[in-house]
Structure formats: C-alpha cells, structure tokens
Length: 634
Image: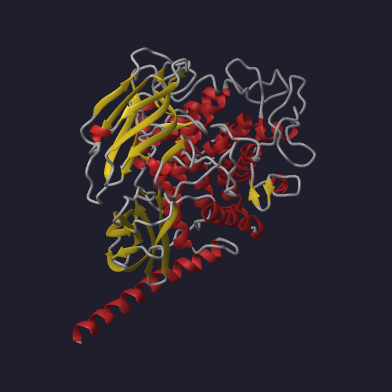
C-alpha cells in the first residue's frame, strides 16, 4: 500500500510541476498571439515533428536537399526559422556543413543547372539572394560573423545588377538582363534592409533598400487590387502574369524589414494593403485555405511552385509578430490547423495542397519541398516567446505493410518514440489503441522524460507489438497512441496497410507504404521515381509466410542498378543497364524472380528488399521506376 501511495504522490508532484511549467508559457502565448487555435506546447511539438521529417531528406555529402539549388536555400532558411522560433538547435551543424562545402565554384549540373560562380552566386540573381537571406538567418542564430560577411558578399554581387537605365531602376532577374520581376526585387529590398538592421552604423544598405522600395511601389507590379503580378514588360508596364503567393509574401516581408529600419508609418500602411489584398475576395484564399494557382484540380505545381506558399507564410508570420493584428493571427493559425488536420499523412509528411485535396490525374504531392513549405505555417503558429515545455510523439514504421498468410495472425513491431523539451521531468502516460479485432501490447505504459532545456529534445521509446488477424480486410487501418504528461497532450498514429497484392504507380500515396528507404531519391509526380548519384531507393515486400514463389515486374528506364536482398544487408544485382541512357529509350517492363531471396522475419513473413540505384553516378541521371507489380504463389 505504501508503494502505491508513493507512486501516486510522485505522479501528482510531477503533474503539478508540469502544470506550473506550462502556465507561464500559456500566459506568454496569449500575449504573443491573438486568439490562437493551438496551445504553444502543441504548436512547438508539431513543428518539431515536421522539421525532423524535412531534415531526413538533407544530403550531408552534397550538403543540400537533392536536385534543387534555390529550393535548398529556402528549406535551410525554414529550418533556421524553426530553430530560432522553438529554441531547438540540433541542426546548426547542417547549416554550417552547407556553408563550408557549397561556397566554392561548381560547374553546371553539380548543384544547379547553372554554373555556380562561388560564394553562392550564379547568373540566377534571385537564387543568389535566397542564399544571402539564408546566411543572415544563420548569423542571427549563431552570431558568427562569417555568415553575415557572406551575405554582404552576395549582396554586393547582386547590386551589380541594379540598373536605372531600364525602367528607372530595379534588379535584373538574370545575368543576361532580360527580365525585371517581383521575386528578385522583393528579395533585394528584404536583403538590403536585413543587412542594415544588423550592421552598426550602416547607411549604404538602408539607402539601397529605400530606393528599391520606392521603385517597386511605382513599378506597376502591384496592380489595382493590391496584388503583385510576376513582373514588368520591356515597356515597363505590369505584364499581367500570375499572382504567385511568394511574390505577395516577399512584398509584405520586404516592407516589414524596411519598416523596422525606418519606422515610417507609410511603409506599414502599404504592407497592410498588400496583406489585406492577399486574403481578400480577389486574393489567394479558397475556402479559408491559402491556395496557389497550380493547386487547382486540373494542375500540378512544379518543383518551384511547391515552395511558394511557405515563403508567403514566413513573411506572414513576420506580419503577425509586427502588427499583433487579430485577423492576421487568425489566418496564420487557420493555415497551421488545416495543414495538420487535412494535409498530413501518418509519417507526418506534409503535402502541396494544404486543403488535402487530391485528384487521380493531379494527386496531392508529398516531398521535401512541400514539407518545407507547410512547415513554415507550423512554425508561424509557435508563439514568438517559445513555451517552457513541449511533448511530441511519432511511430516507426509509420506506414507498415502486412500481407496476411492464408491462416494465422501476423505480428508487426512498432516503436513509439516520445520527445520532450523543457526544464522539468515529465512522467508521461502512453495509451495505445488498435482497430477492433486487433491486439496491441502494451496498451498503456509510463515513460519518464528528463529534458534539459529546449536546445536538444530528449527522447524515449516504447516497443509495441501489433497483432493483425488473418481475416483483416485489405485497406488502411489506424493504430493510435495518446501521450499525456500533466497539461501536455499529443497524439500520433501508424497507418497499417493490409494488402494481398502489390500493384502501384510510383510517385503516389499508393507507393509510400512499400517504400522502405527513399534515401534522398526524388519523385517528379505520378509514375516517376529516380535515384541519381549516390542515392537509392528501397522497397520492402513482406510476402506472406506461406509464399512459395514470387516475381516482381518493374517498369523502369534510364541508368538503373537493381539489387535484391532478404535482410537489407547482403545484396545481389538482378538488373543493370550497362549503357549511359538518359532519354528514356530503354523504358520497358522487366520481371525479376524473387523466389531465391525470400527471407524470414520475426513476424513470420518472408520479406524481400529491392533496391534501385544509379549505374553511372557521375552524370546525375540514375534508375527511374514508373510502376511496380508483384505476383506470388502460395
């Protein structure tokens, strides 16, 4: 009896400490954000989970996010925003890794389609500016002057493309000086104002920012509705091209940084007009959700457009912090809530359409670019004064596959991982639930998490065992875990796919459960997953325990190497293209006998791992798979 009393006293003490820790953060949160939809600790936890997913795509060898140069700058800047907002500092080394490895000269095709001229500059002037802002963010996080010096170097390079001889001013978009547009000049205003606000005694960068803002306001790019079209014609008039969210967001962000430098109320008035237009009846919102033109049901966003909305939300967060306007804050919280509820899968990947809408010909796409974009909204939902504590959780694997045998149940292991920040121990109760007719053990468990601040979240795990009955219906089934520690709550899920057949297009949600290890491979939409350079991707096929033979047919082309394994450790090459082919001329169906590779797993299944990589890693065009189909005999 005395042991029970001691345990109860401990529980109550810890719960009280947790509550006391949370109260200051909640009060601060209410003062920092008007009418939040999500409490501060939960907002931090959501952002942490999503940030970890994004950073799983970071390539430490090339020091970037695969296959996109300017997008990598924005993704790293987003991670910088996350660290600055949350207090988490785990990814500072990746920022520095990129700075040190990628500041040199590179030929076209290595990191960018253009040659890189050194110091993160190229003929793409807007790309150079993105990197300038990224290094200012790194300077803000670390105080290391090398980052600010690099931003100055980049800005000096860009200044060479400010030209009053055409349209009275403005920065050219490209080295060939063919186009003046909104993105390049919005970036220029923000970059120069940020430099001024960080360089003591500066007058040069401030004057350049003021001049650029005045030119931009009078350039005609802001139309009569207060929306920013893409650029101006050679005749120096608005070209009427699309209003992209990132152009609107950059115009807002540019004005806000210059307002901080000058405290000129007219600038803030112009910023509010741009913001009100963005969420007004002719703006960028559909049914309450920020929506890009390419989010339409008959379109798909390209790799550039996938990140536009996140850039908008980055500067919208600045708007909320600067103005404390309830309407602006409500819009920000609404985006974050909608993304978490509608545009997130069990693996906590975030898609391109924040409404979650998907269509057969134009599906909702999930990749690192869409992750970075939606993460910006989650970051904005975190109070500017971060809470003292937070609790998050994930499940791994988040999307396991079960291929039931003709008789007998199937057991799958799932690891529940909790993470916490703060300054007080958290005694955390984890409760797990499975679908009717399934079993999960343990149903409840206690975890003691002892965080030591916010810079490095502490982690703890609970191994779960899920038993799937042999008669479970094909389809997706949800396993849920709820974590509670005092006032802190968090819910995570695993999406278990029960399947008797394997037949999917790559680059779709149907592929995800089978994709065991993407390893920085890329998907360019439906029916197109490829692994270039040293990257690969691996499928895991957990064939039923009573399988006697198995074959897989891949629709594949380009420069592929395909290997098979029964343990994901020892590999045998089963297909290889010996010729350097990049035009798709070798596309075809190729069938592989997997019977010799049928393994033996603890759950009774006979898994086979199939890995696709690049036969010619130096030319940047590896194996590409379009469709996967398997046949089994039992």
